[in-house]
Image (tube, rainbow, N blue to C red; front, side, top):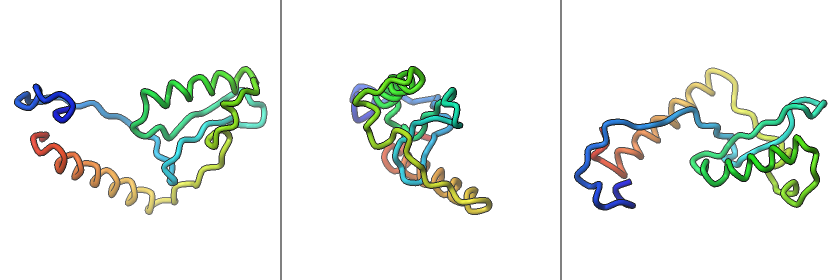
Amino acid sequence: MRELFLCLDDIAFTHRWGGPVSVPVDMAPAIGYIGADKSTVYSMGCMGNGVSLTRYMGWTLAELLLEQTLERMETFFVNRKTIPWPSEPLRFVAGYAIRGYMRLEDKWYDPKVD
């Protein structure tokens, strides 16, 4: 924020927002059907590109549910198989390491953040 809005340089940020991040192992989005009856769809892996990518994914989800065959269905992430995360305890260790790296990166790029 401080790089984009220089006037915020002296402002103390008191709150942050964050939530679960759906990160596939190969770091690429995925969208498709759950089950053979094609009544349920999923979207995951937008990873920080949420505003622009989730809008695109929403359109694609609607087209999947309406069973439309449009050019958008040809993108690589529609109905692709994702690489599964490792089983426990490796999954816990990987998640902990990734979160730790992200906290370190936050401090590195913005040392004013607590």
